[in-house]
Image 1 (tube, rainbow, N blue to C red):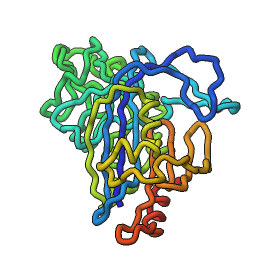
Image 2 (cartoon, rainbow, N blue to C red; image 1 turned 135 degrees about the horizontal axis):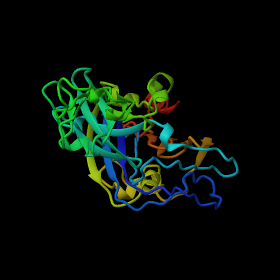
Image 3 (tube, one colour; image 1 turned 135 degrees about the vertical axis):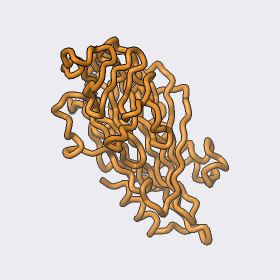
Length: 331
């Protein structure tokens, strides 16, 4: 069986003043979108088989705040709050990163720089602003000692965000590089499923957040019995449209005709039966009784869906294959 993971990186604008209108279930998000998102997709398929397994989406949101806004989202009649800045965010797949230079990215309104710290042998995510003159650190370079160097005045920073060298400072003068204001904001980060994730809050209280909460895990991406391919694509529509698309089984026989080993059949246009097992501000689980066997949305970045793989010899459903997919989806 195959698994299709799509990590989306759309851009949109979040209202800092929220609409008071009640949202109809199951809408969670009360904001509007006006930018072109970028889609990173991962095609993961089981070797020796031809069936899709899941979709994985993530979003990058573009705004221009000095400090991150704090939008609140509600489910109908519950008043549950959702905070975008208390979630692990996917930034980039490591296949799109090179270690010899820093990389710029805008994620949920935050300009960040992703760079390889060879001294700690890990990817780092910093605020993309030098504390000196606010020049983008992503325009800088990695110096000979493995530090991130600003391209404007040459200030150098280690993996902890501390300034280690200011070229213009007198060598025998005050240690101005050690001043607190000379530090760069550092976001907690980790690599999971070959994707760099970061926690979009640089408050020191979240320094060890990975111990308490980890990014959503997709076992098929790390399973050697699956083949994983990743790529990027800019798409001209908003975050909510992409999520809805990835969770919509009705379009697959037509929009993906001849592409996903699925062809329109006499059942393609019939009503789709499904059962909602879980629904709250953090996402939902849906069990469907036709082509799709299960769909899980983990807010705000992951859509994980599975197909019932049919036995190609007799058209029957492979119970072992279905069980494997459900285990991969279930929390």
